[in-house]
Image (cartoon, rainbow, N blue to C red):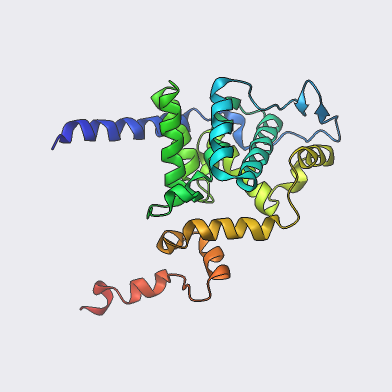
Length: 257
């Protein structure tokens, strides 16, 4: 077994994350005053100046995701990109729109049918796929690894905000699209423009919950300890949430057995 190469690669990955955290702009925690109702939709400028990147990398990502995920998750992922990019622009954050778009496209990829036998967390499956995609397109190892962390952590509240901008924005965009978190931080014109271009279908909540359940019902253990456990309990009356307090009280250390 080649211990040294494995150890070296692990250290390199950790170094990437540490470097990214250290380099977060000083103005991260500051939220500039929101511009009220400035024009949001323009044929040349996209939505408030935010456009989907027009590059081979972005086009390849969009094609792969649309062909694999279907319309529901593809449209959701597109809205997530817009919410994330709009938030980044509002906060004055420095981020690569192309990499943010790939992160948004792949963030739910682990819920697709190709992972029907996986017992990893779906976030990790999607992160692995995004990293492989980026590597195959010649993106640097550092950037590929950053997108891995952004996707892997996007459902873990309270972590992404303290990492690099794309990680924070991806989580923020996903929460906005699913539960309306930060709804009032966007202007009505911005919300209406995104919704006009990529509308939530009438049954979006039920359809999305079903998609999550379908992606996790063969690996319910991966939902434990996360908000996804709520989805499992909602869809499956036999699902039981893990109780960490009981685990501690019934452990070998507590019972002496």
